[in-house]
Image 1 (cartoon, rainbow, N blue to C red):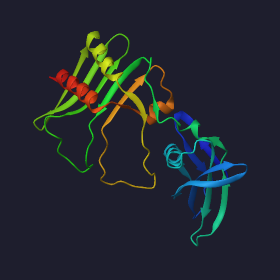
Image 2 (tube, rainbow, N blue to C red; image 1 turned 135 degrees about the vertical axis):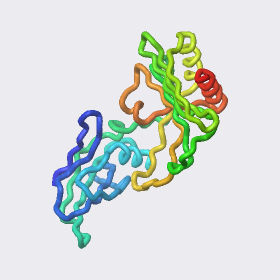
Image 3 (cartoon, helix red, strand yellow; image 1 turned 60 degrees about the horizontal axis):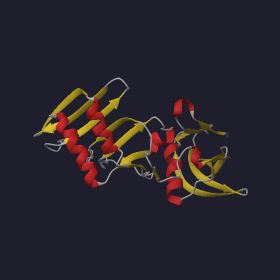
Image 4 (cartoon, helix red, strand yellow; image 1 turned 120 degrees about the vertical axis):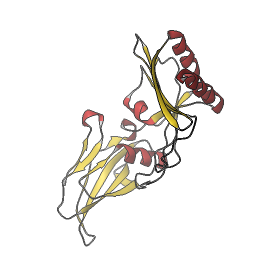
Length: 236
């Protein structure tokens, strides 16, 4: 058995040779001075596993950001290990950031997006008279504003161009915040009806792939309310 890491097109999958009739135990292991210890363990029915969340959850829960590897065991129907192998050693921080917060600083903000949180994925009706989502993007020559909101319980959408003055107002509110690392949920937990959290995101000229995937905008309640009120007014 051979374990490889597939990072084509910005993805991250752990892949290994298939063993007929086997299921797989996959462990993220820290490795120090030739010794390994499990940080996170999961099971797979197929010869591959998404790597981003497995690494992130292992690092987050163990506060560990040094050398790790993926260890895979193929287990037959009788529970016997019939084959096993280690993938190459790599740094946690190649795929998951150590810093829980990062400052926006002098970054040039390119876009902002907002999505309302939901209490349950089974909830069909949208909250009345509320902003549902918004996307603002400055491509350097024009500023696009797209949003959806409810008037009563009727969903409405708006798409327009903003003025430079509007963009400056948005920037002044966004820069009151900071970038915070998202919390990674246990990949072993399958949430059938858990809803989704409220989400505020920005992109900047200095974003790397880890910031794009693992950080979101954090604003105080007062500053967030100010921003969402401004957006709601632009929808009218």
